[in-house]
Image (cartoon, rainbow, N blue to C red; front, top):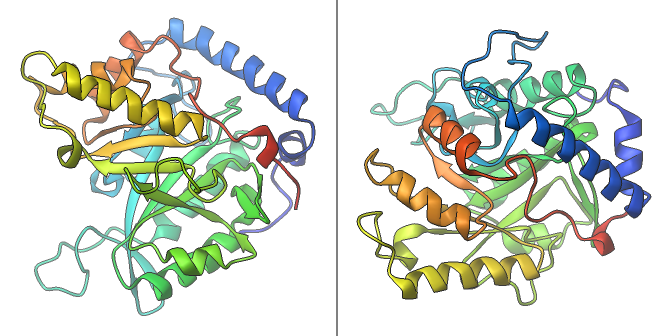
Amino acid sequence: MQDGGMFSEGRMAVRSSGVGASRLLRLCGALLLAVAAAFAVVAFAARDATGQSQDVVPLERAHAHNDYEHDRPLYDALDHGFKSVEADIWLIDGELVVSHDDPQLPTTEKPKGTLESLYLEPLRRQVKANGGSVYRGDPDYFTLLVDIKSEDVATYRALHDELQKYRRMMTTFEKGSVRDGAVTAIVSGNRPRAYMEAQRVRYAAYDGRIPEDLGGNNPQTFVPLVSQNWNNLFTWQGVGPMPEAEREKLHDIVATAHANGQRVRFWATPELPETREAVWRELLAAQVDYINTDNLVALESFLLANDPRPTEPHVYWNDSARGTR
């Protein structure tokens, strides 16, 4: 079920062999998606076999914070073109349960399911139905940010085993190289760095922190993403103009990350309707890679109206990191 031969071998072969061909493929795909974005509207009627709106534009900057709290985990995000979703996991009786709080506490709302039932199996079906990508025709990977809430090593080992079952659609990391997949898993929260660094083969990357993991000796194939709480770095909450010193700091962080092949994400950015768009505009201008939100409709509308290249990633795998298993 999880590891059959149903995925497009052609997609994987192009990804991992010819760098020039891979770049051309991504450029052609991005051009087609950009044309679609120019004619996109917020509401769509036509749906494909997976239930996803056929005319949805995949939005590279859109990240669904605590995605599982929406009525339809994953699917609501997909219907609004989000290219990144976040799921918190707890290792409970051998299962990776998706929940913000400890599912064993009596005060915790009943979880909707496991990482497999809510994300991995639906993504497998999505990739199969769409010819090897989460969104049909999208040449760039979809991000599954997995936030470990329980004990780090034990939970990560269970996560590794789970991702291995779905390895045909997962980005794979081995010996400093990367085999690009339809879905890239990145581990946040309680991250067992030493354990992950010692692995010969991984099906997940490491979510670094700003500033300690920004650039430096952190290879892209291990730390392709760096994140931080917005309030730990900035005081501005979207009221009035952003202080110039903070704007310069934001641009410097992004420039350093991109120069080292890393993407950038901030959590806890202002979400009030009257201030969030001012913050989003600054993030967009600085080329922050993931804009974090709980409001899927608002961010989709904002990006379609304001992102000049909504389907193109700012950073992708370095050519030198590409390889084959």
